[in-house]
Length: 184
Image (cartoon, rainbow, N blue to C red; front, side, top):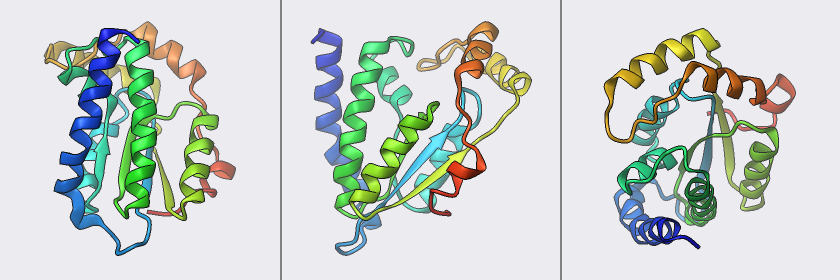
């Protein structure tokens, strides 16, 4: 395991307890919490929605981009992102089991990812929501172009060709999939 990945793992494990203490009011007296998956490409509005939902519900919001940025890791680096998302999946199950609602802000581009998380949460008896944010590629690019100009720490620069390539591989949920999830 690389030094970067070791740093990611130790920070995640050490910080989750603090996050839970701040959100413990969301516990449901022995009932599982709910799992909320945010699905969409970069620029779709996942972070804005996640922040709003986290305050309203309340819920623990797990966003790989935020954590990678705080750790000083390139947001496009695959190995730390994959490891962090794996830890978040595991932590989300533990939190849901404790009655805490959790928002996973991964994008969930593939149906297989969404199915896996839905089935894992259902096995715990939890409700599972999928919030799909469909945004046309031209609008995504407009938003990303503005975000790219901010040059803020923690903002990954995304090119037009990247978003077009990702749009081609993104598996949008259809009606038959959406009905498998609980309503908000």
